[in-house]
Image (cartoon, rainbow, N blue to C red; front, side, top):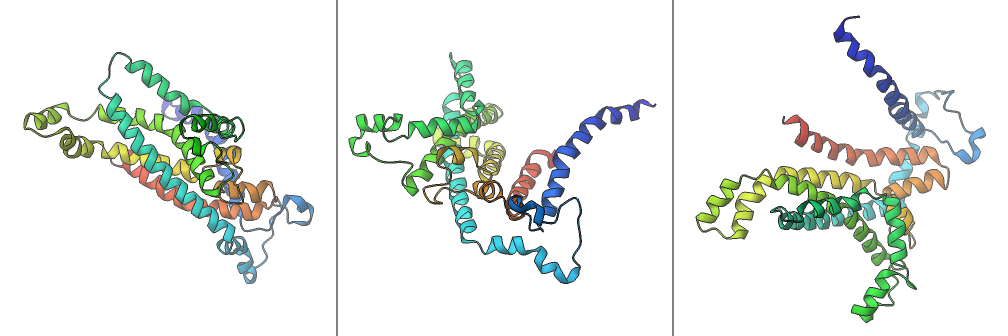
Length: 301
């Protein structure tokens, strides 16, 4: 066998594994999104391994799950919660990370130690973060209750996870805590590529630190900022773990994101066909953000 063909043989096992574990389930769920298939009465439903076409006259039925999704008020509530969560967490995380990066970029004696500590929150499991923050928000013995009791006594008795607005703020806060350190490290890497001679020339010309940041540093940092914003937006759209562990979508449906809504219908009501249809509606904005990410990172090279 010629060497130029040997590399394809080595790649083949990994390619088969990806096709079986990723592409095949994607195709199955896409087919499932056009069917009425509930696990709770699977014997009465049409099995997927024996597909049966009903004829073109039944095509409106094929779109019934999607039509049901677009008419579901709870779904639109989840879209609203996800949108608020995404914009708030992205703006706060990126803003804090940029500020920390500007403070930490010059370096110092403890630079390596600080940067090592920064990666720890991002290395933690989102589910573990949700459990930890749920304990910290406990109204009887939580850390936040103790802190507010000592510093702001008026907030000592607030039930953070029992109020719809405060519960959403709590989830945003835990996500900001999770993501800000990682984005800080990304922005520190971006600041290392900002030309020092241009910054020094601007300072010699009498520009203030703010003007140097706005006119020199920020334009050079925009590609890195854009990548960070897009990545954070993609992960915010599929936010599930911390919502499930911290509030489970409550109180009511005040913190139910789209990913939690899909889980709820798929694994609580066992309505797999409808959950698959909603999943593909969620894929649309994620594909748009992914295309932007690919455009920024790869296509310009």
